[in-house]
Image 1 (tube, rainbow, N blue to C red):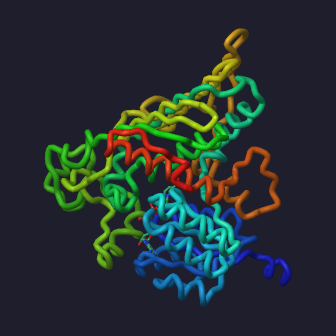
Image 2 (image 1 turned 135 degrees about the vertical axis):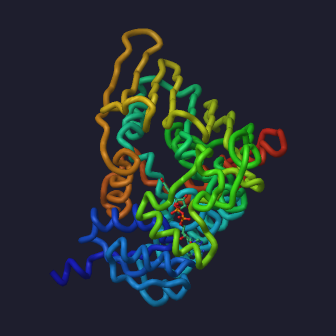
Length: 411
Ligand SMILES: NC(=O)c1ccc[n+]([C@@H]2O[C@H](COP(=O)([O-])OP(=O)(O)OC[C@H]3O[C@@H](n4cnc5c(N)ncnc54)[C@H](O)[C@@H]3O)[C@@H](O)[C@H]2O)c1
């Protein structure tokens, strides 16, 4: 008994918002509690950290000073789950304190921050893992397996289009994500998932991107605006009205704690100063010659993605639907279509749980270094950096109307 307690890995969480409290709090501890010892929680907002402590049901002490937490509770691994632009600082301070890191995506928000993390990892000999959960979703793993099997031959081009519905897409415009300085825009904050999938599937470095981005729905496009939904005079006429009291967990984590730092969870999606795009497209090339056509739209009646690999011998295709308006299928379907010969449908049963079962597999793999990884699903700092750079270069391309180099920014 004592032996198994001593073998438990000491973990600490920084960033006790919705994602930290859920994925890296209640869900992680309910799945892997016997193997893990949650020894500290840290957030700049003390009330939110205490609410999180209650929700997780842990006695782990609460800190507002990150360095004090590292010093006093001596974790072996820190899970970084804060606002995106703060990740690099917390990652580097952890590495320098001799602590390994699991960071939420995006790993960081600029090329300089990515280089700083890679340097710190090399200098300290500690390890950064990036929580790219889509790599672990069953349909994602199956696609990777099919690509590795050579069924469509060498990949020539990829079509990848991601759709966020009005409920999910608008949520990024309510909070800190809506400003480039915090999130790097959705080209970094959201597309880091998609660029990572591309980099992983294509198994080559992204070379260059030409991108377009516009704000066509939210921000200055709004017909009216208010300070926040809770007290908005337009709540009866606004399609984006959000009632924070409808979700007790959101209310507990954000409503009273907002008095400490002014961070409200239901700010107006039509704020005039929003400076990110809701409509994005990009054309990428890879070192191995693959061409990619990508888009991300954040105000759609559908949620999901369409992805196709066009190879020298055939095409692999998935149309993944996540939510309404139509009934959600029981299974995902991958079409394998040889250029000449019979096509095949591969059905993959849907799983419950975050990211279609991806979240739980990711946690199992990251906390058990001995678990085999034949599909190379574990993602380190270099993968984190390359996916961020795809987004950073896309934003630069939008602003300069020029193609921009990607992987070369790591040199
Ligand atoms: N992989 C996924 O599917 C997924 C889903 C949701 C969120 N995320 C990621 O998780 C992270 C958190 O997202 P969220 O929605 O929970 O955000 P959030 O704003 O709700 O929570 C972030 C918390 O971090 C705290 N914080 C900010 N800077 C800090 C600092 N320097 N030190 C300590 N605390 C700090 C804030 O006070 C806040 O409580 C983001 O990076 C986001 O991209 C990933």
